[in-house]
Amino acid sequence: MAKRIDVSGLNVYYGSFRAVEDVNMTIEPRSVTAFIGPSGCGKSTFLRTLNRMHEVIPGARVEGKVTIDGEDLYGQNVDPVAVRRTVGMVFQRPNPFPTMSIYDNVAAGLRLNGVKKKSQLDGIVETSLKGANLWNEVKDRLDRPGAGLSGGQQQRLCIARAIAVEPEVLLMDEPCSALDPISTLAIEDQIAALKEQYTIVIVTHNMQQAARVSDTTAFFNIAGSGKPGKLIEMAPTPKMFSTPSEKATEDYISGRFG
Picture 1 (cartoon, rainbow, N blue to C red):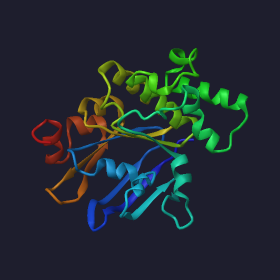
Picture 2 (cartoon, rainbow, N blue to C red):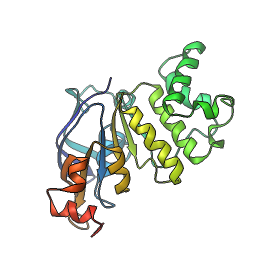
Picture 3 (spheres, one colour):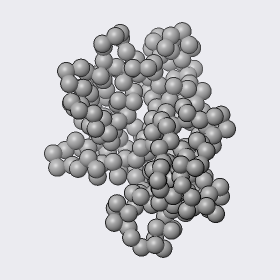
Picture 4 (tube, helix red, strand yellow):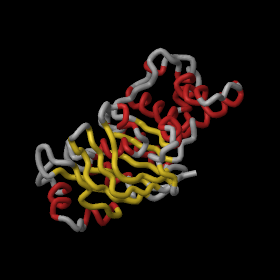
């Protein structure tokens, strides 16, 4: 069941450095929201606060609130591991578990969650690989290493692994930046199909990709070296790319800086 995300007054710190300042936004369920902006503007950092992945970096902390359907992700008794089951993540570079087969890559999270029955695992592995549009390419070699697939296939395997545990939100941090154009198109097609079931948030440096895949676009910017990243503007994607409200957004989209 796709979920709605509400963020209010969110500040992200690494030690004393404030990386992201005072973000407020709502991300609608069953939609694709793209974060764009120049390097170092905090968009990937902010993305990681949506499933507490930033906490793997020592000294990281947040102030403010992130709720998923009204539930506080940073509540006192909330387990970060449980959060990451609800909010899946696909990273910039494909990262299949190198020693595991294609099948075991997809089943890994399920087994961690206590699913042991082979028939159940078989069904979910097949469904997840179909959901990532990879099943027909790998169904006859599920016992082969995941690392033996092409880059684009590896990234789709990582999507299958993420959706196997049935998250409600799917975060993607530049999922196509290491891929060729044909693989990129395959991933973009999958994003369009997956939004029927998931709330999807994607960070991308590719303007055309944001325009193609997202329903809503958020532009982050940075005032200068050592300054925190800020959310400048967020709007439906067609409006953002045709008539942005802020000059900084227009300059970035038209390629005048960034």
